[in-house]
Image (cartoon, rainbow, N blue to C red):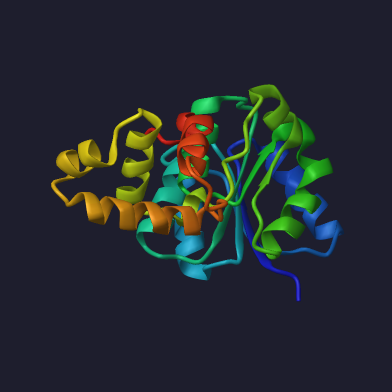
Length: 209
């Protein structure tokens, strides 16, 4: 069954173009909105599978709507469409767990692929955007670490010893070693000496919180 979709854009031509395109391709468009307030009201009323939102809209931006949906635990998966090739916006979208980020100039070409990915529970980001930002993929399994574990890995990347880490975190060196073992297991690293140190050094840019 086709996923239910709500779309929102404050440019009437973009909104109409997207609406017509999705309808022609047999997508289940429940409603469309021309600003962020309308979009949020529609999402709360219908709880669609997917909401395709312009980033910049009156009242609420697509990112603000995503934040509100997350706070309310709404299962709707958010896809942003935008002209913005902006790293800050991209990272904000990633941090909010947004499912799609499609550049408007490629929207009609890419929206089908994006919807397919989202249905499968995979994120979709415009290849052009990733190329433009030269985005590095997040290291595998990094998202399995807790904030506490990330902090330990960060300190390892800064050449801190087990004793120094223990002092900083007010825990015993033995507990630090336990954490290290868990981190190595979660990151699926080989249990060689220094494997965690090498990994931490190579991925230090991803460890800043």
